[in-house]
Length: 418
Image 1 (cartoon, helix red, strand yellow):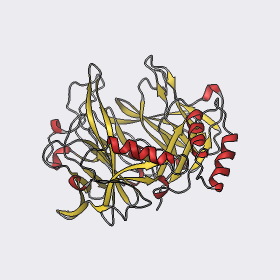
Image 2: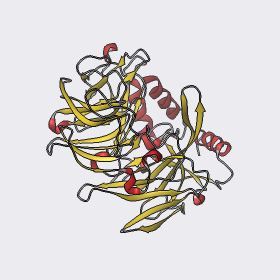
Image 3: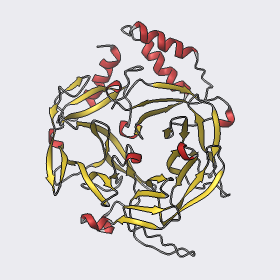
Image 4: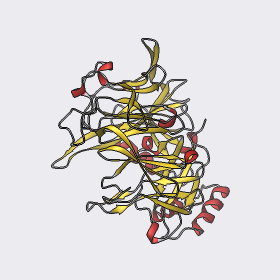
């Protein structure tokens, strides 16, 4: 085992709680213990992970979950720089990168590049003009087949719509205002599917629209008329009990693969669902049994062959609210029901840990958005390893020669393994 992994193991041992019995470096989950079981809920079979059985912590290589990692150098020009590790949407021909808002409401707009890294267009911009956004962008969709991009800004009652050259095309209205969501526009069918956290009515707007959002799921037409919907009461959850003002987690909303109504401020039991459009039902698929007390803040997601989760601790930060800290990740194989806590190790580079892995998987892709100095640092660490293979050494050495500290960001991405 190389020095980097030895250091990782030492730090993991210090940080892991006493309930975790061992730390292993593995290439799959076959050596792990069974940590989940099936439970029949009505007509549905739900996978339930027993949190008490999550004891081992494993170091899991990234290559176990993804195909070959690709590296794209974004076009370098100070006027089109990408700042920070913002969210990335990978399409067939294009890459859409989330903007970065500053306190003074200025900032880096959403940017569109092609798969070679060439800059195509800014998508909107920060401001109060036509096609601009004064709040941060929370959700995006890249619709290459219909030459469209859709953006949802924080606390809004509509989607902003653009073409792939950045031209503003107008809005798709929502009947309610809400702060965060996951959405999917089916332009061919003229529908929009929305997943969000309901909120209680506080007032009405001058145009007659209500701030109340009574649904957690709905499908509407392009004009904003609701076609079908699901209210939280359908699941025995009162509107005032729903995690209002928080986010919805999904690893692939385009396939309605998984939907998890995440609460970053309230500890509560919850379930990952699939949405059945035909019967207008949320189908329970995966949950975690933490016991009746001390349920932690947690987020759930779904990959092709695994369920994954993120467990954190709530830290109050007056006067600005709270934050989730001390994240711990776990993984469960859908077929064998084996699993463990895990650290996702970037074996394509320096074997360092990838933080917040659940949130790196979206729309069938794994993505990283790095500034050049971070990529150079990891390449140097990888090349310093005396046990690196000649093939990997050659590949990383050639990549290093192409990187300049003043470059724009680099996008690292790969498809999930099928």
